[in-house]
Length: 354
Ligand code: GTP
Image (cartoon, rainbow, N blue to C red; front, top):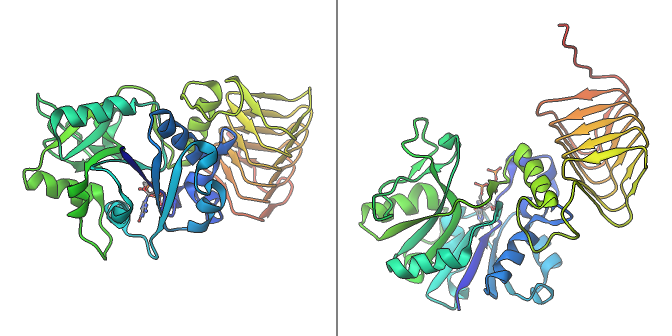
């Protein structure tokens, strides 16, 4: 039976400060750690054996998921003492693999892709590697993957400023086991920058499988909040969504005053409080966050136990755990507040008159 490998060893620097205390795949997303959504999809595809390639905060994964039985999975963990990169991480789990076909996932991709169709395509083409592709409007920030008429990959152009195609690497692959064994050991190796280009240069059979279903890389704050909102609203399918899809997911133990407006796919974590007159739009509140009266929070992530005081405005921002945004402070456009920081009342305002 096919093995699944999930790479979860990255530092998640683009999501700091949220990832200072928790690895990116463990951040609460629509009510559960993000990785739960991916594991549930893997289980739904009939795969049971999952190996997590961990490094940064490795212990957190096993503490939470254990041997995987509650999810109907058999989960193993392999720790990299220092991060080995994406291909190094795949190579590092080789001795745990049980099958000749290995499905590999980046641990921060939210996708509705049909995994059975991907595996079928790989078998049909008798490929060495099959790369799942998705199409995006602006491919410049991604790995661009042109293909020929037969669906064979012709190049692998990482973060090309002049992309030749809108097809990008979706961060899901099927590997033939022998290809994994050929990845060098003992040093960091990037699958995108080293392994794929080397396979192409060596004439390996690297095929593409285009899936046009839901796809989003949750590596940046704006995508993290948008992906979470899409899960809550049912636009991104997940068997692990705790509750029915809707405009807001309010977890048990959260208190939302009837005079507050909460929508846009927001998640209100356990123990959160949202006061009357507050507005929460398309945002993620980790457990214990508090929003006081009249505050407005849009497209933002509020860390564990953080507080947004009366009349404050928080838009497109990331607020670290336990940080306090004082009354009438205004934070916008990519603002990040580090854990435990206190922004005093009205200390930061934006004016459109300047
Ligand atoms: P940034 O620091 O914000 O770029 O995030 P990241 O460290 O997660 O890197 P990136 O988004 O490029 O990683 C894609 C996926 O590969 C994520 O799920 C990471 O956890 C995982 N990953 C990245 N580097 C390593 C590594 O060295 N080892 C392992 N096991 N996984 C990795």
